[in-house]
Length: 143
Image (cartoon, rainbow, N blue to C red):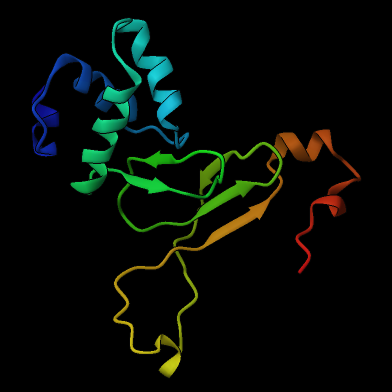
């Protein structure tokens, strides 16, 4: 329990279970994913508890809310700046091996004071590449 004291939350058993579910989780789970895991141990826990806990963790910058998937928000316990690879078919999200981000040049900031940046890379994960072998061109983004 001591490992979660720096969250700034009142540590109930349910909140500790949510934090444990997030700790080191590289799957970028949604609130629904976390709820499914935690309710096994706490069957009376409400989805609202999970959602409100995530909102507080986001506010305290203990998780990053990803809005990559328009269908649902995902949560990343890795708060240091990094980029993601996103499968356009199954929506799998993984951390990119590089944190290199294109930089704006000169006056392109248009008066903004930049405090962070994030780049997402879209493509097909290995499983979807295998499943859709030879059809990859159907998923190329066209403008």
